[in-house]
Image (cartoon, rainbow, N blue to C red; front, side):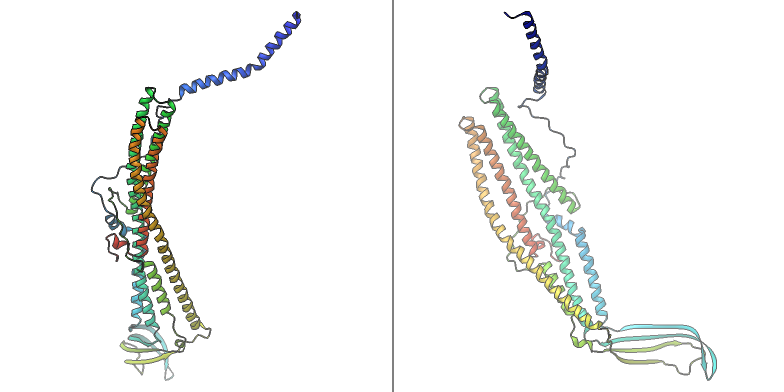
Amino acid sequence: MPSQHHRRGGAQRQALTLTKRQPLVWCVMLALAAGSGLAQAQPSPLVAPAMPAAAARVPAPPTGQAESLAALLARALPQDPAVQVARALLSATDERRWQARSRLGPALTVNATAGKSLDTELNLPVNRTTDRAELGLRWNLYNAGSDGAELTAVSREVEAAWQDLRRAREESAERVADAYLELLRGEALVPLAAERRAAVQRLVDQVLQQNSAGKVSDADAQQARASLLDAEIAQEQAESERDSARQKLARLVGDEIRPVAALSLPVPLDDSGSPGLVASAQLRALAARDRVRPRSTLLAPRVDLELRKSLGDRTFPAQTTLQQHAWVLSARWDLPLGGENASRLDEAARRAEAAEADAERVARGVRAELDALLPTLDNTARAIERLDRQIAQYTSIVRSGELQFEAGRRTLAQLIQLHDSRFNAQQRLADQTRKLQGAQLRRLSLTGTLLSALGLPPSP
């Protein structure tokens, strides 16, 4: 039989053991209490969590008749900065043509002289006052065709500037049309997302009723609710993308956007057209080549005809000889000994080579991009046809799947998967349609037929 001392020591050790385990016990009790509090604080999985309110909602588009892309472009193109820059450069280049043309005609000069001088005549000092006016006409008769070559070059540059203006309008129209197509994609996708959400909402209501009756488990109810959240997120994302596209289009147009109409882009008959970008580079290359003069022009003189007529001469005392009118035919050779003229010819030749190479670069880039668009157009068109058939099949399967789910022959997960698969196919169809329209838009722009295809005159 153990002694009292041993019993007392055992009790002390047991108390000590409980004392050492007391923090662990308290931690377990606090964890259980916290878990109970969290369980009471957390909402039921069947109750929708509160969604944060949007900080700022995009205002609804103004109501009214749907407007076409051509109407938007008619408002947007005149105020586009790139178009305004190109139009101003065209006017400036045309003024340079007038300057070059004026060099082929005569130049009128008027000389007026007024002053005093101390002259010596017959060894006698004479204080003379001069008040003379003279009219002159100078005409360059020959300069080895330099003025004519400059006029031809500047005329080509005017045509190039016109092509630049046309290209600026094409690029501006392409930007607006691209935003227009993005808005059409958003407006096509939002109803589909809303339809999916409504279908999933009906499914959730049905599952909740079955869960209340004990026919389905809480896990199925939670899965249905999670699917509804996914549908809500997809719908909000589609609405956000649509609103962003509308805001972007409104900024490009500079005005509010009413509901937009559907757009059908025609297919160019061929790709042999010369877009403004290529035509402008080719014309500038020709202009640079026109400025390259033959070496023989270095030795050619400059022949000028000058006519002068005195309008009045009140010189006192009068000079002994007064010239009333005269004409002069002069030939002048300007041969800088430092080689300036030869260097200018070489510079013009190198600039012409650079302009021709740049025109070839632009033409190859446009051709390469056009060739690269052909597989995209072909593949995307086939994908759209297949997606149309796939969506029709999914729609039929979803209808039969809902009936089978009510009869207990299909699970909830399978029905949710069918809804998700159909919506994914609808999203891919919207994306492929957008891709096809974007490729068609780019092809029209590269061939220089975009404005005419949209019903706008190609010339500004």
